[in-house]
Image (cartoon, rainbow, N blue to C red):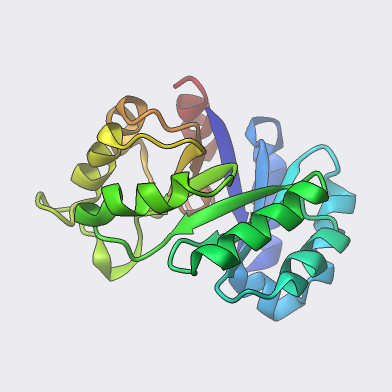
Length: 210
């Protein structure tokens, strides 16, 4: 399984943690907050430092403005994210531009209830995106059983057929390994736990083995 590590605030601590985990990480995600705080030039800084890693700019594009993708690519991004709630033209235009540049697009499925996964999958499959990442974070998801429980929601992904690779994000811990494995997930964003847990290397290794 591919491991995504998110660079987040505080930057110095996050970058120090990445250095300890570098061999286990496939993709570095630069958070939207970092892009706002540091500007798109921060992408170039990270790409120059780690040229062998895939750099994902979490732009979460919502409007049909290719300039956002252009800025990310010109600064070294290998992939950008576009929100699943964006209209299909925005998604298609972003995907087309990125493919022309030899780059990839991830659809960020944010704030979508599990009962709507089938509908959003149809929209995703109508595009030619490379990855679809389901964000299980924020007040929408809880740890208790039920429709909004993180574990139950991840389990629901096992019945969703997607053309792009599946990825998951948002307070993901080893507690969800079985559900993630059954769901056919290709990549997992472990930024939340790897930035906070003293056993981060062991956690990364466990997910890598899936």
